[in-house]
Length: 141
Image 1 (cartoon, rainbow, N blue to C red):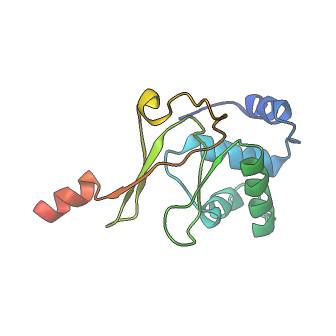
Image 2 (cartoon, helix red, strand yellow):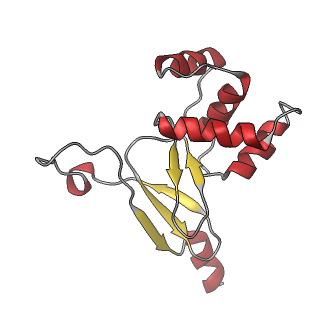
C-alpha cells in the first residue's frame, strides 16, 4: 500500500484543508500502511500504542472528518459494521462470509464506471460476498 513519510502525510492533509494533528497523522499513516479494512476500535487499539492518552471519540471524529473530505472510504457491507479503507482508488470489496475477511478487488473501470451523461459520479460501492480461498482450502482439507 502507501508508505509515505510523516512529512508527506502532513502535506497531504494540508492540501485537503485538514489540520495535521498527531492523531490525524497516525490514523492516516495506519490506514495507508495496511491492506486490512479495520473498524474504529481496531484503529483505536493500534494507535493507542503511540498515543496513550488517546480517546475513542478522537478516533471517531477523525474518521468522520476523513470520510467527509474523501481521504478514506467508509465501508458498510452488512448490518451496522463499519470499516475503513485508506485506498481511495476505484475498486470493489470482497467479503468472506466464513471468516469475515475483507479484500480489495481490482475491477475494470470501463465496465463498472461508464461515462455518465446524466452527471458526475461522486461515490460508488461494489461489494461481493463469497468464500475466500483460505476458507475454501480449509473446507477441502
